[in-house]
Image (cartoon, rainbow, N blue to C red; front, side, top):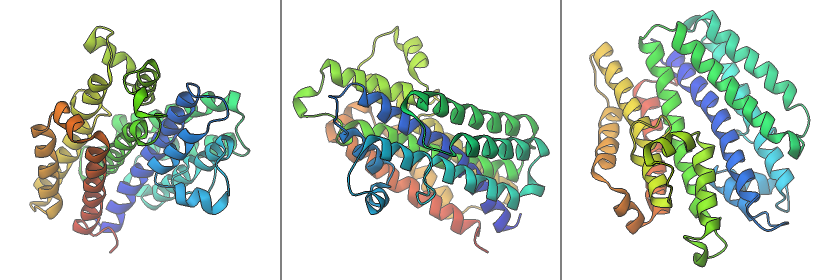
Length: 313
């Protein structure tokens, strides 16, 4: 496969995943804001910081306001991680690789773009925000379903899946990190009812609330939730699940092309680190520090995949 086509598939599905995960990050901030004092917008600085777009926001706005932060992450085309920017980029890449994907996948992506472009044509009112965020999630699921039901399991599928799970690993780590970045007013709140509500919100934002309760008989605590979202390989948005899928698809490519690359070694190291770590050790050393290191590893891996498979030429 041409590197340009492989890169188009990889980035098409990275951007699709990013649009959904940006929506999930907004939902986390929105729900956590409901637990905070009126007029306190600190959680939105945390959300912007976690999404790595705070510097772009402050280039356009002098002050932090919830409505402006939400609009920036939903609609602002100057923000490459906004929902509208991401879905636009996904559609552009889908056009680039139109002959490599099925008609059903193309139509699902195109319909998603048209629907969200209309829904985000103007600022979203707070009362309409949950409905719009749900629409983003539903459209993302539609594209994934079209892909799962119509695509051959070959290198086209593998590069698409790599884009999905590299982005998902990055974004689940970021959603987890939003909890401990600056959200708690003070250390005295750790273990409080506010702390527990915020952890529940993080769990809900990655669609893991019901699954977690099934596994834990309804009992929840911060360490248990973090363990679930980091180390439980059954949870499709956990770090371990994402890393396992990246590993599998890189292995399939190695078998198809009969060639290993540095990215294969990198994912092996990441998988080993997750297998050897425990949630107790993570909390002892610092959750934020663990997630920062993981995000660095994911960024390095994504760049190495691009280099190994010559996406740029």
